[in-house]
Length: 467
Image (cartoon, rainbow, N blue to C red; front, side):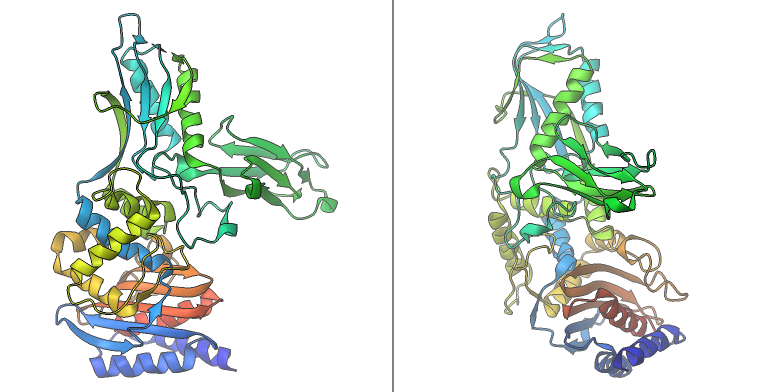
């Protein structure tokens, strides 16, 4: 009965006509939503703030420490934008010692230097190789060397759940990563009773395929695509009965070796020879030959709109390199962002804990009021606000809010970051009321196992805010 009542109440709020509400009415309606629709066994911390008036509209358990899930990306984005600047770009550089001679031989070594670019794709690596070829490079007398010295060797953040691998949302983080550190695996039916057709992108000799699948054979069981991640093996294992085209994604162990393998394969395909490969640090006197770049704004937009964990972690780590240029680690980055917010939020007295940049960690704990304080900071800086507001998912239109609160006139009035991990369902950002005022909000549902029920609560509250 409680579930039926909750569904009916949420639907009723979503159907209410737009009309400007005063703060007392907003508070009364949110109280009613929490009382009648919050899923049994869960709790909520909620804070709503009038940005222009700079006053509280609604507060509930606003100082309680909560798991933020992917709303953590809002805090990471502001820290990165403030530290790196709006014009910053993530660069993957190719440098060389020595000169390219008339015969096309580089008298030295060629370095590819990782710069934490989460949007580096195989097309970028191919373009880098093509530009080297266009500069006359045909052979390298020395070695091709990968430089990943910007980071230590710990590729996962503190508090990450180890059995989330080999999911693509948990990559092996490195300064040098291509295709997000994962591959796309596509399956299509083959001849009945025979193996299905398997395609993996990007193509590379770095991994192998163990195809045990069958086409239209019910005895083969359900489809499963995995790898022996427990032993860090990169053999992609495909099993089960394939009756239709389908696809999935798997991360690979590990990202920098995968990317380096792709780069050297592309050199060979272009006909550029070299005398072996190695890992090392590029000397300061090496000359830059070419580079691939993606802007901070683009990386941030993908982190916020599509909730890409890798993008958030790259912003998290790269921002901290302003203090720790070499051998950056998740621990150092967590300390940097903690110190950043202690300075930025001058009156910050409530406790909080930062462990990573994406919200994957079970050690991230942020109170709802701190989200409000950060949203107020963002709002107070026009250029920063314009960038982050534009990067946030928009309800009914794009990102992780494209399918939520789609009914007019509500659609387009909420710019907010979603978050969902087992035990937490969150939403934080800005809502525009019917009277035009901008409200910042944080809704942190804790104990959530079924995300849909918590999202209905969030949508109902946002509907109230937009009236």
